[in-house]
Amino acid sequence: MKSENILNELLFNLEKQIIPKWYPLCVDKIYGGYYSNLSYNFEIMPEQDKMIVSQARHIWACSKFATFFNKEIYRNIAYHGYKYLKDKMWDNTYGGFFTMRSQDGGVSEYNGFFNEKRTYGNAFAIYGLTALYELTRDEELLNLAKKTFYWIEEKSADKVDNGYFQFLTREGIPFDKTSEHQTKAVDKPEVGFKDQNSSIHLLESYTELYNVWKSPELYERLKNILFLIRDVISTDKGYLNLFFDYKWNSVSFRNAPEEIRKKNYGLDHVSFGHNYETAFLILEASYALGFKNDTTTLDKAKKMLDHAIENGWDKTNGGFFDEGYYFEENSNCEIIKHTKVWWAQAEGLNALLLFSKIFPEEKKYYKLFLEQWDYIKKYLIDHEYGDWYWGSLEKEPFYIKEPKSTIWKCTYHTGRALMNCIKMLDDGKLSLSNNPGYKKEKQSFDKFIEHWNNIAVLR
Image (cartoon, rainbow, N blue to C red; front, side, top):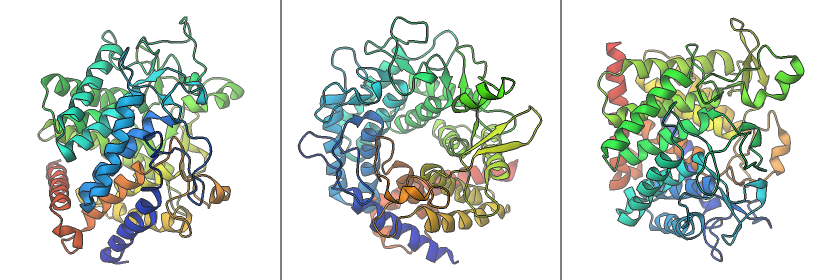
C-alpha cells in the first residue's frame, strides 16, 4: 500500500472515527471534568467516578488536538478538564492530586482508593497541565505543574536509594505492607515495590515539563530517571523488569513453585508494550535534555524494540502479544498472555514507524508497521461505532460489546500514536500543512528524527 493511502487512513481514523466520538460527549457539564465510562456504542453509563490518570490524559490529548487541527473547541474542552483537576482533584490541605474522586469531586470508594495518592497519577497531572500550558501560555497552568513536580520530589522521591515510592497516603507519606496504613485499593499487590510503570511515566511527564521550563533541578531529576530506566530497570536482553524492592533488586518468581509463580505473573513478566513505549520515551527524554551523540540511549531503545519483535510479535496473524516470560535465565521468552490490548498495539504502531525512519536501511520496521496497521484495521478499530476496542477481536471477541471508555481508556495512546505517524508520513501535501500549529509540530518532530538518524549513522 502506498504511504499516501496509509496516511489518509490514519488521519481518517483519528479525525472521523475517534475524536468526534469522544468530544464533546465525554464532557461532564454538570460536575466538571470528563465522564469515565462510555458504553460500546458511546452512551454515558451510570457509574462515573473519576481518576486523575484519565482526567489528565484527556487534557493532554485535547491540548494536542487543538494544535494539530487548529480547533478552538478542543482548547475549551481541555480547559474544562483543568478546572476539575484544580478544584476537585488537587488536595488543598496536603498537596498532590487524589487518585480517585466521585463524579461530583468528593471522596470515592471506587476500587478502594479513597483519599490515597499515587506518584503515577500525579505524573500524568503534570503531563496534561504542561500540554495545556504549551497551548495557552497560561501561567496558572505552569505554576500548578511546578507545584506538582515539587510535591513529587518532596514526598515521593527516595533520597537514599533513588527512584520514587508509588504508594502515598493523603498526607503524602509512603507506605508499604508493614505500615500502619493498609490500602484497600485494587493495586494492593504492588505495595512495597518500586516499579517501571510509574518510572517511565514520570520520565514522560518530566520531559514534557522540561520542554517548557528549563529548571536546573528538573534537568537533574529528568536525567536521573532516564539513567535509572535505561541502566537499572531495563535488562541487557532489552526488556524492563517490572518491580523492584526499595534497594533495586528485581522481583522474580522464576524459581518459585509453579502455583506461586502463576499467582505473581502480574509482578514478574515481560510486557512487550511497555518495552517499545519506553524505547520511544527514553529517546524523547535524551533529546529534550540536549545530549549529543547519545548512542547508549539509542542502542538500548533499539534493543527494546528488537526484543519485542523477536519475542512478542505474532508471526502468524500480526500484532504484539501482551506478555512473555523467561522460565529459566537462558531460556527463550515464552508467551504467557496471547491477548493484544489496544494501547500496546497503538504504541507498537508509533515505535515501528519511528525506527523505520531512524534506521531506514533496516526494512523490517516499515514492513511490520504496515502489518501492524493492517492488524489494527481488522481487529481493533470499531468501524460501526467508532474508536478502538479494548482488546483485539481476534483474541477476545467479547470486547465488541464492552465499554469504549473506562478510567484507564481514553484518547491518549491512540491519539499520540496516530498524530506521530501522520507527522512521520506527511510529505507536506496534507491540508493540515497550512495550519501553523501543525506545521510547527511536524517540523519539531522531523528534527527529533533527524537527530537520532544522524546518531544512528555514526554508530
